[in-house]
Amino acid sequence: MNISEMQAEILRLKKENDVCILAHSYQTHDILEVADFVGDSFALSVKAQSVDNSTVLMCGVRFMAETVKLLSPQKRVLLSHGGAGCPMAEQMSPEYIEKVKSENPDCAVVAYINTTTALKTVCDFCVTSSSALKIVNALPDKNILFIPDCNLGDYVKRQIPDKNFVLLEGGCPVHGQITADDVKSAKALHPNAPLLVHPECKPEVVELADYVGSTSGIMEFAKNSSESEFIIGTENSISEHLAYECPDKRFYPLSKKLICEDMKLTTLADVLYAVRGDKGSWEEITLDEQTQQKARKCIDKMLELG
Image (tube, rainbow, N blue to C red; front, side, top):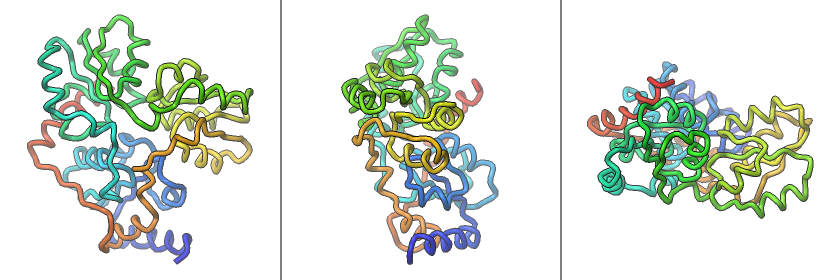
């Protein structure tokens, strides 16, 4: 099969087998083209609630598929590649956070959506990169333990100075490896291009940016801007996707290092095997009821706060 033949077969089979395909924006473009919905992880989970399909295939990483299952427990949820994890989501255990909580009993624990379901069971509130400022600002609590990403936590902290933050050493190893020197090098090559970065980047990088926002926020800013060229400070697939959507503009990756290996595990063939039900790298996500109930609480509180 070539790419177009494989895509055609996926489109046929997903209808035949009642499968909704969700694709995170960091997936390759051939996968985005067969997806029913494309976007950031939590937005995709919400979309999954609204469809009638009995099966949902998440083309992304494990915590994203777990979030789909939390919001749609009655649906069969598949992860496109069982080996696709997230180093940031997995770097802190519930036991460790329980210990930190005991040392900071007056703190509300705010979990970034990029956390495992197990970790969410010991947290008070959940946030996304696009909602973090709004949610934390709306909390009645003055003292915040923000996990796991200290860079996103620092970004929120700087804009809400009337609250006290406890930040731990954690974060996205892909975004976190970018430095101010990387920005200087990119700016030297493209001096007129605005820099758009994800708040998972280090403070020294965020301070040099012309726009800071979620993946979807970065894409919308670039598409709606009157500027004709941009430096993109998030996973390099976004530069590619933007080039397809805005061929009259130019998009330059901030660094060749901005590649998420876990996101790149999923191939178009993996999607085909999953919708066909063949043996492959896909995996069905299962969560016991007690874990679901505990983990869902911090997400529900986020939804209540808008």
